[in-house]
Length: 166
Image (cartoon, rainbow, N blue to C red; front, top):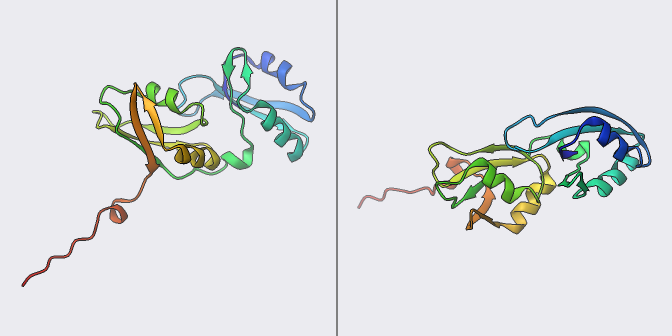
């Protein structure tokens, strides 16, 4: 569960009402600076079926006045491909980008080169979230439309030019 802004006791009171809930394994701060708000809770359920039901129930729910996201362990096990957000204004910061993308899903990584060059790299925890973001494609950051695309290695992106000598 991503974006939790309360203590473990309050979260436990909410989760114990969900069938199959066993325990909160840990509640910790986000492992990266990509998610500036909230904590990440790792929660255990009796079965995968109970966990899937809980994910459906908790995803995009409002808990203590804050939208939270829920993902199954299978979804967040592996890093997804990196994405690039283009056409950022030079005064945009990580929090601006995070707020524009938070409704899609939690971010694993957000790298904004300094000095700002009009783009940033990011990864979602879930491949499903990355696919949803790519489908949407265009977002607004600081009242400016920005485009999201998959990152491609420079060798594959740069067109091959041939020198023709006559």
